[in-house]
Length: 113
Ligand SMILES: [Zn+2]
Image (cartoon, rainbow, N blue to C red; front, side, top):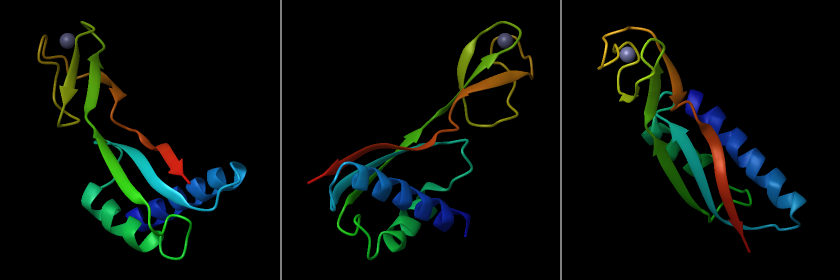
């Protein structure tokens, strides 16, 4: 269960931040998850439900933003959205591109009481 360990570290990060801010209840947590991060959103949502049990996030709204993957072609610098990691550049057909967005796996924001 890859997603469960991710969910648990997200909860840990959130609790750490809440403690630093002297708060004990988190109302809302927002996550940015890139489509190329290797995380299955549905599985993460499900994992979050069990990871928050008995924590400061027990009653928090969990919002998950899916970030589409973007790449830039190394040959013509064309920037495009990708669905398939091995898709060539739509402008020049070059198979080499650098991923510039879509590997996010982070806590975007936290709202506390
Ligand atoms: Zn290109």
